Each structure stands twice: as C-alpha cells, then as structure tokens.
Length: 158
View (cartoon, one colour):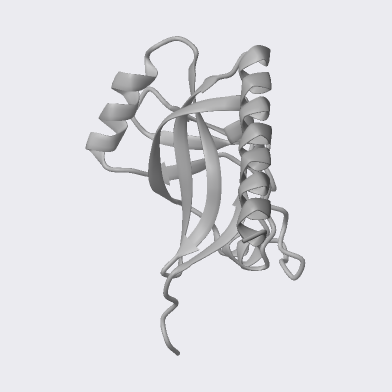
C-alpha cells in the first residue's frame, strides 16, 4: 500500500483568526488512540473551544478539542473531549514558555490535519482582540473586497 503524501485538513478554527491576533505558530504531533485516528480519518473534529497549555513538567497538552467517538468502536472507544499530549521539541516548548508568560496570551489550535499520514495540529500563541479591533478587521476586509470588485469591473471594460 502506498504511503500518504501531502496534507489533508480535518478541521480548522476559522473563528480564531477573527477573535485573536496571531503572534506565532507551531506544528505539533499528537498522542492519539486508534479509535481517535479512525474518527479523524472520517473527517470529524471540532476545535471551537480548544486550547493548549504547558504543565508543570514542561509538557504541552491540548484541552477541549472534540473528536467524536468512532461509530464502529467497541469498549476500546475514547472519550470525545479527553486531554491529549502534544509532541514538540524542547526548544519549541522553551520558546512557548518564554513568549507565553506575557499576560493576555493564550495557546489555541488553528487547524487539525494529516501530514504524510500523521495527525498534526497547528497551535498559535495568540492575543485576544477587543471589539473595536474586530470592527476594524471587518471594515478592512469589506474595503478590500470592494476595491477588488471595482478593479475586476474596470478590467472587464477594456
């Protein structure tokens, strides 16, 4: 059987980019059980309430990420919102600890995907946006759309 190549996205936290300023991102592997991998291969997961944290032993864990139970699973099935360990290098964890000590920063999952057959999660160090920041982002996006629409209309007129 040929090995998988490339990336296959399972879930993305689209609201995270709206609610947070992304400071830095990392790609991490995850410690999963067999039924979790099978459930992910069916394309089922939710990152909405998820967050990550470094514990006292210097290990990073992912909390509140919902991977539903595998439909054909038996008594070996996993719980949907269990805590999952993330696999990062010591240097990456040290950098997260160094940058993450600042108040107002949190670790959030941005996307969950398979890369060359292995489940990965992209986590980001992020700062929450205020309401006026969100309004500015929406206004900028609308202005960019209007400008692109005008340019397309002008180019068609030639």
